[in-house]
Every structure is written in C-alpha cells, then in structure tokens.
Length: 460
Image (cartoon, rainbow, N blue to C red; front, side):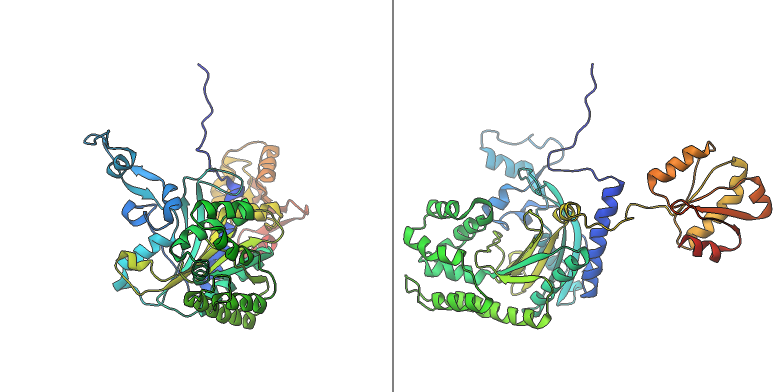
C-alpha cells in the first residue's frame, strides 16, 4: 500500500530555521519597543472556558471560535436529538482563544489584587480562528498585543500610535495609521435614525475595503436600514480632506445639520476625543502617515472609543496592526469602570510584508559563527575546552561531530551560512595553537589557544 505524505491543517504553517530566525526578528523588535514604553510581558493559556470567550466578539466572531471537545466520552450522556447548538454546549466547555484581549481582561479581573494600575502589559502568543484560509489570513497566527488598563487618558492612545510608528520605522515599512472613534459611529447610527442598529452598521461598513461601497449598502439594507438612513451614512464613508475639514463636516452632521436633523451627543463626544488625540499626534511628530478614516469600524463589539487600523503603504495585504479603547470589557467579568486601550500587531501578515518587500536584514539565519572541523577524533579533547571558552564569551560554536573529509565539512558550513571554520590536527594540538579561516574573504590566521581576545577580534 502506498504511503501518503503527512500534511498539516489548512490555514496553519510549518516554520523552518530561516523562517523562525525571521519571525524572531519580528518578535524581538516589537518586544524591545514595548519595553521602552514601560510594558511588561505576561502569558495566558491557549484555551479558555467558552463562557469567557462567547459573546465578546459579536455573532460573527463567535462562529469563528474553535471549540474543544470535552475529554473522555463527551457524548455519553448527551441527548443527540436536542439540536446542534444544545449538543455543542454540552460537549464543549472550552475553546482556543480568538484573540489576546479578552483573555487579558479575564486575567486583570482574576489577578486584580496583585496588579498596580494603570497596568501595562504585552503578550506575544498564537491565537486561533475558524476562518476560511486565504492570502494573509490564517487559522493559527501570532498576535503581539500591548494594552494599558486603569487610565482614561488619551496619552495612552498617543503612545500606542508612537509604538506603531517606531516599530514599522525599525522594519523599514511605510504604513498608514487610520483612526476613528466608535462614539462617532454610534452618532452616525443615531443621526441616521437607527440608534439600535449600531452593531449592524459597524459590521457592514467594516467590510468596505473587502466588498466595496455598493455591497456595503446592500448589506445595510438587508440588516433593516432604510434608503434614507443609508443616504445619511454613505457620504461619511468617503469623506476626504484634512483632519480639521473632516471634523468640521462631522460636527455639522452631529449637531443636527444632517437630513434627519437629529443631534447626537455621543457623536459629538467622539469628535472631541478625536480632536484631542490628533492634537497630541501633531505635537509628537509621527513619521508615518496618520489620518482620520470615518469609514473605519473594526467589527469587535467591545470597542467604545478610539479605534486604530494600520496598513502597509507599499504592499497589498489586509490590516497588519489594529486596536482601540474599550470601557466595558472587564465589567463583563465583574470589574466595572476600568477603561483600557490596546493594539495588536499581526506578526504573520507583517512577516509576509517584510518578505514581499525584501526588508529582512541579511544574516538573520546564521546561528553559528565558528565551525571546528573534525580532522581526527584524537584532537577533540584539545578542541572541546577552546569551544567552551568561546561560547562563554558569546561566540556560537559547533564542532563537526564526525571525523571525515574536509570537503563535506566545508559544504556543511556553506549550507548553514557559517562564516568561519577552524581546521586543526595533531600539530596544532601539540603547539597549543588554532587556525581560523574567514570563508568570505579567505583570510586565515593562527592564534595561541590562550589568546581568546585575539580570536574574538578576528571573529568580530
């Protein structure tokens, strides 16, 4: 019988040596920037109780949760005629986390007596979504989150924008940082005459980039909005101009100058917050483009204030970073009145952008600096202490494990990108010296085995 080649689930990926070196470059860069703003790292479990996850992402988000079957015979005492929803509830009590924000809110409530507020944390961990795999969209992917809870100040929003700007500047990626405010979207629903349709409106317009304006209008109609209401919303989705011009147009609408004549206090409050935030941003001299995008919705129900989305300016892919402010998330878990704001870098999409733009630094995959060739196993007791001392000085060394032909060992060094090789026999062992060759330049020098500083200078 023919053997089948093993595979992995669609929407997941293996990462080899080169890919992991590149991914660690992403993680290390983001981690280093987070730390400069006073964020500390935590981790939460891959699985959470479904009661923690359900109802936090909206109906569409709930559908994308990976549920975990209870251990043992999960169906032993289940009424199989009860219907799929009832059966699922009985046999699945846990699920893989959909994002890092909701588990973070659970963590804050559970550990509130151990935390000093405002609390700044970051997490770099995988999340899972039962989505349809496509370019830039995976079922398993890493998020790199930073959140601060326990402060209402929009200085926190500013610092998140600065973090985004710094990270992508380090990556050499030009980005556009788009900002809106969910209160403005609430106001938009109010002046359209459908204050109870805020979620329907945001879910629809969140798809604007994917399906286009006409399809968004069709979806809003399917969700119960009238033609008159859609006519109020449509001009806002394509609003252009400077920050001041956009704010002026929206202030007119929120103060009763729309076709409906409705005044929205929530919308006016959202515009006040946008004006304050962009005042901070102007003072901060952000390098990348930052703009108000009044069509930006971000379809997660827990956002209540500023919302962010970041896209690469020179590479076609979806959002590579996003986030926003949430006032009520911890209240769901019994700790009301604790506001927070956060962002999440999509590491997998950032990887694709860096790869597509050829922005990864050279030499990331070089894990070993010096290879000791194995000419004769009798020389190994001489080489082992030298390799140990070099490793103690931070030099990555390998001793080729099997004595053999030099060509094979040179080929090994070439395949691994090892820049230096040391070839020594009984003569070097007797004289207490080692030879080191730079494989790029061909330069070769001999050192006393005790001259560690000279060896380090040559290797560096």
